[in-house]
Length: 208
Image (tube, rainbow, N blue to C red):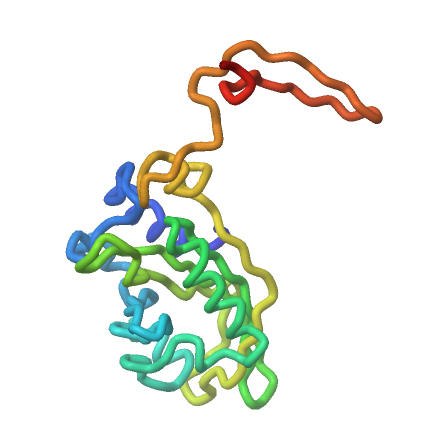
């Protein structure tokens, strides 16, 4: 994460999360992130697996020249980018990943601006991810946009990170998945093949 807003929001979210898949929506206290609140938003997952804005900060709405509340999150992106957005929301974020997108935006008169978009999973009523806490942060000094709202945007790069280093299900949570990592490795041997080197741990499948 490059932007200070992203870092601040992530650290707050991760502190509340602890060792769980994600924190619950009601655990997010707006007063704790007051300085960055105008740059944050919350999305709601709908039955068709799309996401709409429940809340959007004032600086976000001012920059893009519209009120986002109730709008489809992916709809404001170009068609090729919607697949990326939906893949992140309905893929890694459902397993506790954090989504990070860098994108560029442009006004009708050619003024451009680089952004970092952060997406953090939340749990509302059930046990699965049905809310997303996020933020928009500028990566370049923004021009005055009061009379020139941003009209276009395009994703430049995207990635997801695992706060615990691997998907939550592999840690024994979230559906009871079994970790593919050995907690107590036993006997191992080194195997070389075609200049490649592997360390092989003996498991239980080959033993009676």
